[in-house]
Length: 116
Length: 115
Image (cartoon, rainbow over all chains, first blue to last red; front, side):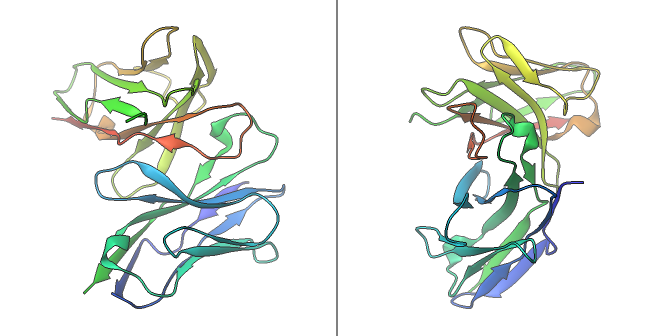
């Protein structure tokens, strides 16, 4: 069965510290991978995505994620976080060839809280 | 602002009443998706619609829930005879094409509270 697992429901870190939010998926077919961010009282916004090519993808605000096919992971990292990164982060998987968003599977989310 | 617009942002209903949530997709987008987010849980797919067509409603509860996306006007998610368990944030997303890369554009959500 296809699934997405975000092992950490909450991650507290100090400002300027590095952070890693973990995402593992299960699929017998090829996948597209995404990280979405949800700031308080807002909808989700796409942070970054892996469709093909380089396994390391970056966002404009300093986050990066690496697709590791052998470990079926797509962990999100940032070397130095800022207070403004406080949000909930969702990993998502979709499946090439499917035309419906019902085949997009979201993880349960990781709440990142930054302490000054 | 040409983003996905949802209204109302907050809605309070008593048990047994009806809730209607509206979603206008981004300009140029013709595909609409509804998701439900329960407290401390992830997003659960409910329904995928194109203009005048329900494409996939595999995530919709069998009773009391319905959705439409008419030729003119916003998409509407309708919940009849609400119960406390319907309290959640309901998010609408849109996309411009059928080719699924998974990139969706979300509205800010409608938060339903059932008393």
